[in-house]
Image 1 (cartoon, helix red, strand yellow):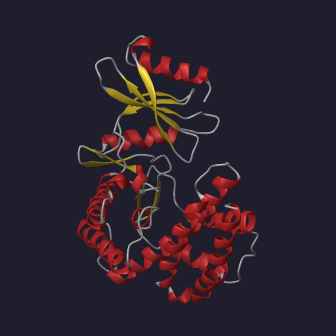
Image 2 (cartoon, rainbow, N blue to C red):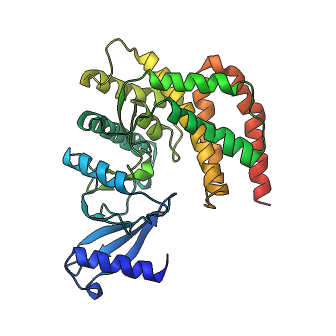
Amino acid sequence: MSSSRINALTRWAAEQNSLNQAAITLSPAGGDASFRRYFRLTLPDGRTQIVMDAPPVQEDSSSFVAIGNRWYAAGLPVPKIHAVNLDDGFLLLDDLGSTPMQDLFSDEASVLNYHEKALALIAELQNRAGPTALPAYDAPLLARELDLFTEWCLGSWLKLPTPPSWEPLRAALIEQALVQPFVSVHRDFDAMNIMVSHDRLYMIDFQDAVAGPISYDVISLLCGRYWRFTKPQFTQLANTFYAQARRDGRLPGSLTAATFITQCHAMAAQRSLKVLGIFCRLTIRDHKQGYLERLPHFLDHLEDSLAALPEHTAFAKWVNHTLRPAITQRLAESTQ
């Protein structure tokens, strides 16, 4: 980040607080897989705010602002947006601290406890925020996401041909997603995007929210990058969400728990395939570091979900006998 942009960011943040630029300090507060960067603004009285730097050439923050304002007005736990400069890509936000949820995973009991709290937060989102103003997570978008796997993981990184079992799986995963009730979907409801402040969970990075399948955020949470639940644990947590959604009316009474669990596994397969593609794209196209070593974890998630979809045994066998060895070999070569 250039010194001139830092100066412009500091000057703008000071103006929003009616202060002289020399009266405030900015310190780095992290970044993510995008081009966004965050700084902690310290005011003379010790209060802090977060300044988001999202260069408009690479990032369009208008959706973040629109969704954030709507969700905040609905009483959802998201950072309040204090000031916006979309022309320069500057935003001034509440400071939710420096503790993402995964930092509190000290043991299995704490993991289960925080995931149960996060499932309750998903229910809160779906109950309070209607999906009508959000883009649709429709068949074309689901297909484009799945195709990230074949384009970037198989084609660009591994140089592997697409197996014949791919097209039947691709079609079935799209179909399973579209038969579900559509709700407000955060779309990256991962432990790193849930901040814990004063023992309350807050959502961040919601700019890609869509109107989509009710199980999607559940899967983002339960099949994230920081933990791999056993099959009984996964089923128990998904059933907890299912029971609450039935009581709230978000799921119809005609939908059985077994059918919902199957839909969750299909959604998990879709997301794992998408993530494998995205992580390869982040590495190859965007020159981001640290994503390839996460591929085996999401490969585990993919195999877990495929094991619950017996009609796709052929693809599951290909994953085990071809994809996993190819990823293992390619990662070994990259460390030599």
